[in-house]
Length: 459
Ligand SMILES: Cc1cc2nc3c(=O)[nH]c(=O)nc-3n(C[C@H](O)[C@H](O)[C@H](O)COP(=O)(O)OP(=O)(O)OC[C@H]3O[C@@H](n4cnc5c(N)ncnc54)[C@H](O)[C@@H]3O)c2cc1C
Image (cartoon, rainbow, N blue to C red):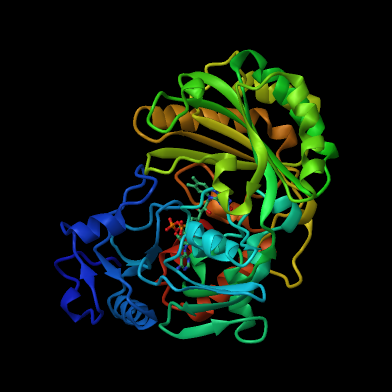
């Protein structure tokens, strides 16, 4: 049962800061990065520490109200309405241990860790967008621009501190509460609200990376060449290809605006000269409109994908591909290539394999490591274009069906698209995750737990 604002005794909510609809802080904390997702929680609890979260969870449990968590809203799911929302922005601890690990609060975004770690010659396994939150990303596995070399970010976690749905504040490591430690790596917010995470860093300061942007006339041919070239790349290289249909807008480079272009992203963690040599065949296919690949500080990682920074309404769909033979490439181009009027703003294929396909030292809830490519479509999330983007993405995924692999990645499965939350977990992982969730959240207070249980038919 969900109570309304009038019947829920919000006055009994004994936390440092509660924000109600109408306040500026409520708007700031509740409005997600993906503004297409409806977000009208009953109240926002701005967590000043873990005990605020414990109080909020216990209060919600007594009132049978759901509890959601958000930092940036990059992965906003439509689960916030009629719930209270914990905002973690003030949990901003960020300590780099020069011997090679970090302790980071749930309010920290990757940009801060990239910069702080770089001062010690160290690197976190951040994602493509430095504005994404460390905890939201890492609990979803975390697949970044150097993932083929170093694997999922969640495999480097040493410890979480977390408030569970029954109001306990626990530490989860391989030895302490190992079931939580297993499931928080891949399970996102299903098992609890993380307050801090500790993880290993990589010794890396400079990479050979960036993106080549090709003009409309060359894009299809370059994509065909990329699809063969990437298969021979060693693990030092991570690459993706993205068809871009970017509108003229602030921040969009003039040569890329108002036309179809192809971005070939590349990150090489070995010797810089070897990276240049590996990329040479792509530079030889056609002359890029923009050549933005070269030696770069690892901390500038965000430049590789150049993801949009400002909040925007997006409709995302995601699937995994088992392989990318020439027949699949032609089917892909028939839906996305330059001869089409694809309504998507971005359609990207990230090459997987390498370290991504290896299991971490300890098992976790990240299920599908064996796929060859990850497909992501990003369209405009406002009516009527949202429906057009959704139908188009469904058509693309149906057309690629012969090559679609089982499963999805948790970080790309929670948006407003077709993908079901349960698709991110294989059968035994889903069962185990829900069993662990139920033991720490028997009244199903956490909205992520509610959503997964509902999607699994246990709601
Ligand atoms: C532009 C863009 C680029 C991206 N690039 C990548 C990428 O390269 N690789 C990749 O793997 N993913 C990527 N993502 C997906 C992103 O990692 C997920 O959406 C992630 O969940 C965002 O975390 P957040 O805290 O910023 O977002 P939020 O929307 O604030 O949180 C999303 C979800 O994360 C979980 N979560 C957040 N905070 C907590 C917490 N304290 N405790 C427990 N659970 C929590 C919850 O389930 C929450 O609903 C990208 C997304 C966008 C929009």
